[in-house]
Image (cartoon, rainbow, N blue to C red; front, side, top):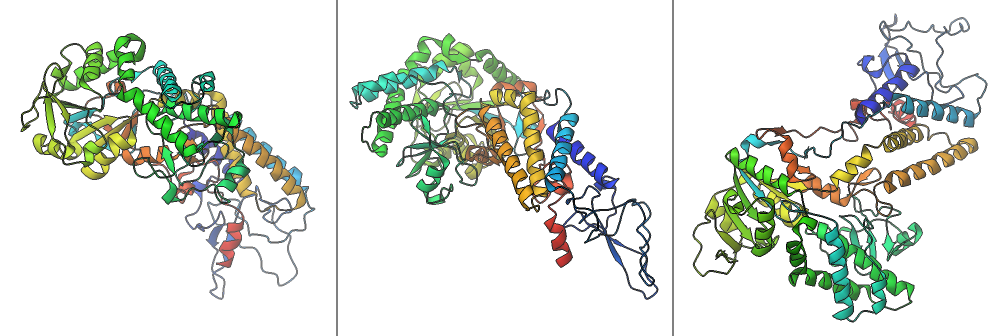
Length: 603
């Protein structure tokens, strides 16, 4: 049973207990601002239509403000108007009473009773193994994609066709740290800071001027509790003060279209994980030892040191010397390419890596004849400039990888090309629009321009899906997240209780809610949580993933689970204003906050 099904069951049970009938069985005459149902009674002798309202017998107040009794009201004095008959088919509909003579109930007892009822429902209605259906090999759709319409498949190389082990991050970190000490003359004490696996996650932002590593949500707000100066968390109060009394980061200070801004940089590349860890370590060294420094200089030096690892070819050398250690799932890549070609698909490769490196890796994964699978192979393409620059020409490489001099008038199968640009690529191949599906791991460098400017279909490779799916499938996480949603909805619905007793109860609830938020964050990563969520909001990374990719998956091998003519359909998830109609949200469902009922009477 999915989260939606569980939410629907809990919400429906709450309604059934309080109303005698679920909301879907109600009369169509429903006030859209609240749970109050407007029902026209029989016309009086004077032709006047009387309007009645109904609300939950499970009232929102202990003193009977919304209290309903199923017994007939006592008859009033002579001349009092009698209560109209209940409409047929709508049992339990009573006239709203705005005053009550019932003895007042203890507010705290009332709120805790509601709390316990809701918690009991959450635990009772989550079946064992509710999330066992989650599968990390699933392909997820942001947009509808019919593979039968896709004739051409394009691929990046690093972290797309070739998946690397985490051991590569350690070598990149260590070599860049050595460059800092030997080339940039940083203190020897930095050697004390070893690489910490899983200290950071992809998609974080780094404030270049303040030296802060942080996670930002889709609305440009910093997530409290996820700001680090060096290896130490920065208190939320200090973060708010540093950013002018708010957690919001203005658009002009943000990281720009390609994740690079004047003040903030977003780390979107999987290769950037060791860079973020080194930034945290070196910042921590200077702070701990009381050494005055400019965070801007530190950022530039570390960026250059990381760049040297790639430009000087160290990373390529390490991988080529021990392919078994560093390359993962090579047999799956081989199976994907064989399957696509056997179904008549055209393939091409566009990568920033050099030919010698790609040739070694592809030979290891696919075999010496790997180029026979691809109609076009382009290396050292210099993405993302490859997609925007219309000046750099293509150059052909010979079998040894040496540059040739002839002008390129066609892109031929079996040949290797260097640099070039997308505009010449489109002109020479004629591959345009939704016939093309391109796979890459970097949302900006690989996918953004192709989707927004050229109309290609795009597929994001997100290896983090595999460990995060395992976390979401955990029963403890499932129960905690569902209870967090239910508790949030309970607080939203009962927030009009503002007497001293109720405020004390709400303080306890808010404390528990904060603890649940921390727990559901830390199970992914103790410092920064999930790469997809900042509590209830999507992360900045997640929003870009939705914008720049039609589909996304943990690896290209996920294609093996689907027919080549399969159509991926995105799930229609409710917008906030649609949620009451979907009946799948524990937070509010159709039970909107009580003050809206009062607003409906005013209107």
